[in-house]
Length: 161
Image: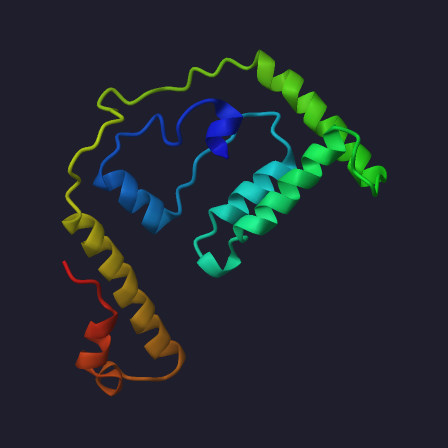
């Protein structure tokens, strides 16, 4: 959805490597949107990118929402109200803003859109470090000792290299 708003692939200014993957996993880095994009569109996109997969909408819900927006824009929405009129005005205004944007975002000099091997060892180390932190935090929160949890159970949570 970010690509549709900017005309650029997500993370165009970054080198596509394990550092980017770790930044996405550890810091929750997400693609940016062009200025003038509707709040309802950005909210849906962010919901689709939620780190908790249970909070992401199902494909059918996305289809329903986008279909509603299309019907509002085409004046075929049955329940026209103030919100529908506002959404239509925002979409039409955003269309005009997007036409005027210069979409030349900075590109990383080593960026290439071809398949390449990425060393996943560092990514797994980062993920395991996060998992260990979460396990230790839960032990502290629920007053378990690491020994009570058991080394065997703890190792079951970690991702193999």
